[in-house]
Image 1: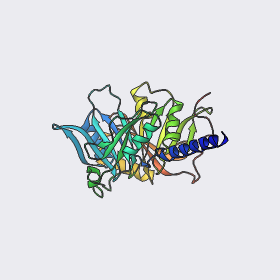
Image 2: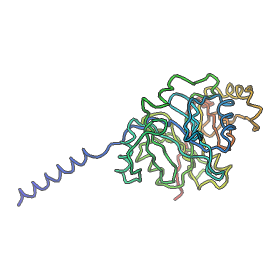
Image 3: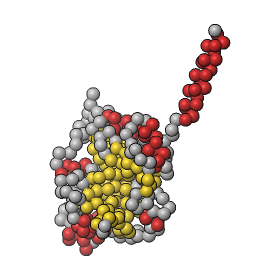
Image 4: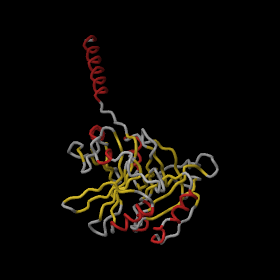
Length: 311
């Protein structure tokens, strides 16, 4: 009997070891390659991003001659995608992307963790990069992107990067979250690394910055209920562009011939992270946050040591 028990225990240990080996590992997540937004007037948006902010549009995607997406290039691995709206009531923000070197592997990994994923394997998009969709617990859409050598993106490497660009890096994308499970999704499941949190009321944190696991881009989670007005929506859902010298960038913007068409004030202020910021808004009211790459005092950004959600 004793030998039989020992053999049973040994067999169970072997089974556990085999299952551990077979556990699906998360592929690398190295950056935020693009953000996609809906626009009301594609030509007005092109004017803002290209003529005012200084970016190029190296390619676009079309179906039967109809424009689906205009690709605004920030650098060789980061873009803003502009999609003409089908209805003025549609939310402006469509999705943000996460870059991986194994999109299908990430789909399988998320499935193994019990999250809903596409029934179809990761596949080439119209621009021939490989992708698969994900959705966090708050309903924010994520386009998992794996760059392919024959894609439009890779064919344009080293091209279409004017010195007129106000920034050469998409630093982060910001969006709202209201559920504890969403923070768990990014930190514990996807492996994001928290490096900063801030508070507005001194009781709970309302902003959480999470860096991608194997890179330096990050997402900014804005804690709270969903925005109730288009203005609040456009302010909460935003992208940040990093700049080395805010004064020089603002001077460039004010000297641009397209400045006459931008009717808002351009001003600089210091944020809670002790970095100088400047908020611009595209023609649909989405916020473009310019962020200096250093704090005003040269010290690390002060961080709130507070819980994310009220008990």
